[in-house]
Image: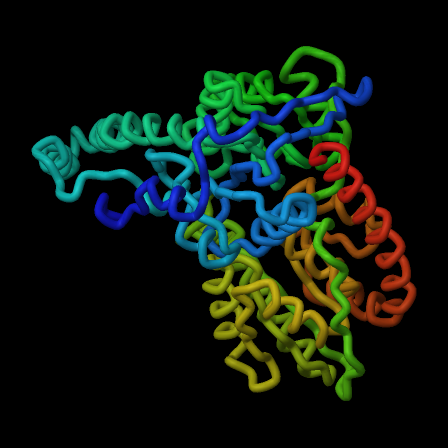
Length: 461
């Protein structure tokens, strides 16, 4: 828990040069075509732009997206003031070099928020609820009451601060990723956050745009209500894939109204870090916390254990056939899984655990690999950005969709269906065809990067 005294005060924005609305000319949104393309034109040489994203807990895919957006803004307005509204402001400030503030005051289970506005000590209500949890018959109502009290304690203050922050913006960008989702935190997680910030943007006449956002799960009616309200307030919307665009049109009850543009991570500068290697046969394995009872919203210890055991068997098999293995992660919680796989494989000397907590460290490791086995969408995308062939253990339709778009469907395997011998055969086939696969990736990457840059040109002028 972050105490009130640890929260960066809003006057830090002034020390960073961020000015109030009187010192700025508001951006003007100019429609460009029937697809709702637009240009954000500012008459101020130093606009103030906010980035809204549930990032900050070590997910390198989210980090890549924010880096791409920040680079696009800086290339057009070198002196622009960029402010992050994220799940972990401290990480955002350190990783991206921009001031940042919590995107919510309330954090439902599995939707972590760093820097929240909470009382310094537990009050009498908190102590009473703690006692309720000790009574078996009342335990079922104690948690909902505790969450309600947490919401009422933290959200009013955050609403006041968020209104103050939004008033100082020329533009708010919902910056990529799978933000149309209630998997983490359910309806009162990110669906509520999107609704809240879009409401404040509308109230303050601040343009808000959504760039290359993907759809996850919206399991409850309330989540759909929140997302529908947020989408209806966007000045501009683009979608990461056609399925998201279709589902949004169905959710809003209207025809398609925005373009499909690739994931914003493809907007990163091309990665050129594949020096000649003395050793061939190096396989990278990036496990994920799939059904891990410690962190995954849907907890299934048996499924997780089978997943770890099969990956460990694959590690042993690869080493027995003369390969070296590098275990790496693209998300903080996946490091726990990486350690579990390494231990289950018997802590082999030829299996190294890489420290990939930053994008430069990750791309440095990818440069040394011949092929990669990954499950997370951005674990796959970032490997492809490094022109590294990938076998995807797909846990979600978005991973299979990406592999199909990259022409790699034959190297996509369902995470619940794979067996070790068959997966080893797929890896061997990919190794044999790695040069041709890299050529295909290079072609697709060039096209995707051009489309992302074109979107930046259309929305940021």
